[in-house]
Image: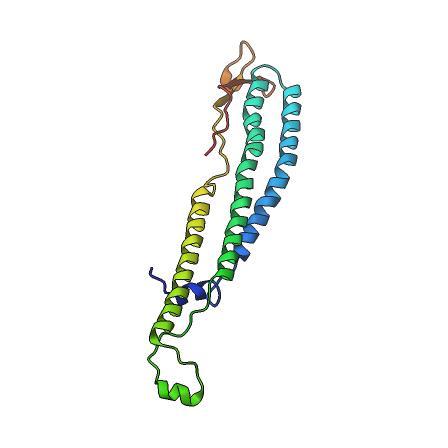
Length: 204
């Protein structure tokens, strides 16, 4: 979309939507990042409790399922800090551009020199008016170009996801009491856990 010098000025003033949404996103990311360490500690306590309660394959399965969760809580903190920084940068870039753009002067017009002398108005020539008009227009274009470049960088650098957890392949089966039919195993039968290789968090 082609924007004139006036369009650019209005984009940061009359038609501006402000920076509230970016500031709200920054605050949300900050709050979540502050909560993550405490959540990781609680998950670690859960892991310790499960490890002490179970042994063997069952304990391995518990660790394989909970450990990636605790690690991912810590890992995504970096992405949240990146989000905070980019939201702050975007808002700052907007305010900087809004303060830099200039209102456009009137378009150059051919004035009657006799009328200008009679009214005491300044006798601007067409060349003077055109030079001033084009200078301000180019200035606004340069400001918009800088702002657009900053916005593109922020959008490209913004995390697209905040961590994922790989599936932990584990099956749970009933091991019947010796001499009994598996289909009629009593409720007191031993539960056997077959744990796969512990999952590790995948970063995206």
